[in-house]
Amino acid sequence: MSRKPATRTRPAKTAATPVSGVTVRHYCQGIGDCHLLTFKKADGKPFRMLIDCGIHVSIAGGPALVADIVADLKKETGGKIDILVVTHEHWDHVSGFLTAKDLFKDFVVGDVWMAWTENPADAEAAELDKFKGQAIAALQGVGQKLDAMQGLSAYMAGVRDGLQSVLGFQFGAAGERVRSARDAAARLSQKPSPTYFEPGEPPVTIDALPNLRVYVLGPPRDKAALRLEERASEMFPLASGGPYARALTSGLKINEAIDAGYVDELSPFERNVGTPLSAALKGDKGSDPAIDIAAFVRKHYSGPVSAAASMEDRDQSWRRIDADWMGIAADLALQLDRGVNNTSLVLAFELTDSGRVLLFPGDAQIGNWLSWKDLTWPVGQGTVTSADLLARTVYLKVAHHGSQNATPQKQGFDLLTSADLSAFIPTNKVDALKVHWGEMPYDGILTALETKTKGRVIRADDPWLADKDGKPGFAAPSGSIQAVRSAPRDAGRGPGGLWVEVDLA
Ligand SMILES: [Zn+2]
Image 1 (cartoon, rainbow, N blue to C red):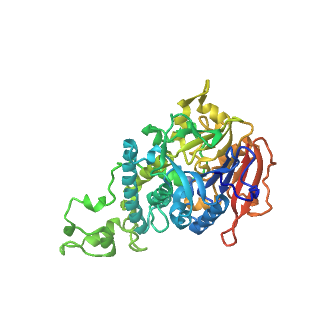
Image 2 (cartoon, protein in one colour):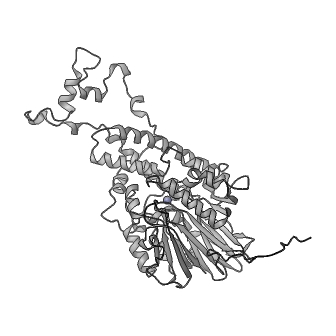
């Protein structure tokens, strides 16, 4: 018995259901990723794939903006997401699953896709996880110490700000852990656990979408690639800016297992025979009445005694290394940040009827990109290589908000050779400055992309997105781009667009 409705109303053709190909709706929260891909199934119904949903902790009003985004997602999809992709465990990619969990609980999510690095049953993932846990604990300890210290040197103030930036990818404003947000995303799945992917497996096919193949390019298994140092020859030339990146890279090597509370623990003396430096500098005489330790310390290690003092009695603070030893945390912070970005699940979507490819690299940094070089997939009678996928890429979600170290030149940018290339950068430059993560987006990459795409670069803070009648600076249709639409944010959510979407075929 068929159960046909008595009357059939023709479903309204929603803007997000293209005749063929895919519609990509990018939300424009500034620093953070949330992309809705709408494919069309054989029966004409939409197939929804959501990639990430987060905003960086430094952006004021972030959770409210993400709530608007999730409300829009609900309106657009009816709360039905076929596949949710979580690229990596950083707050600006997953915060929404926690801060807007009450809105997400009404969603039906068919499956959650994650990288092998998130799989608790994977031994190598567990090892990486241990490193992450230790590094975060150490950096938190050092961060709290530096926050509480007065009169830091310019260098250590730079390290402190750099740590805040790195920790901003790990925690929410109320101290929520990024792990809780990632796990909240995993729990949305109707399946008992997420599906984990790794490169080297056959392309993923989806029954409902016969014209789509999904290639997994990263994250690599190779530990060296995950934590790879930046290679100068693979990077766009450094700009004069980026003092935080410079401050961090000049840090010393640190033991991965550094313990946050180490200063007092390693003291060779009993606590009751010492005088804390801060107390001595304030004038406390210490435990031995026979020695005026405070006078000694102030004379030899303190700031200005008086303007009339002889040269050697003046500012002696240069003799102290109160905080400088903590500079070693800078290198650990970089390792952690790069390591987590390099765990990004990198997906290339091939529209098999046109051969065109959309590349979503998450926040993959250099090591992840370089690892794609040797990947091949047998498809039909032939072999698909990563270089082939890059050459056919017509649409790029720019990695890591366009930072300088997340799009290698020779093994990445130069391989994107399609004359039809367009790109989206999930970055708001004003907010990026508050993140203190060097230059995002990096001018060198921005200029090169503008040239290569003939201006078909959309950025989350493009002024035309704030205007409900705004139009991009390039003409559509243009090759693969069939149409571009956008919607401004609600009043009270700051200037700018809520989303921009492109129809690609
Ligand atoms: Zn990010």
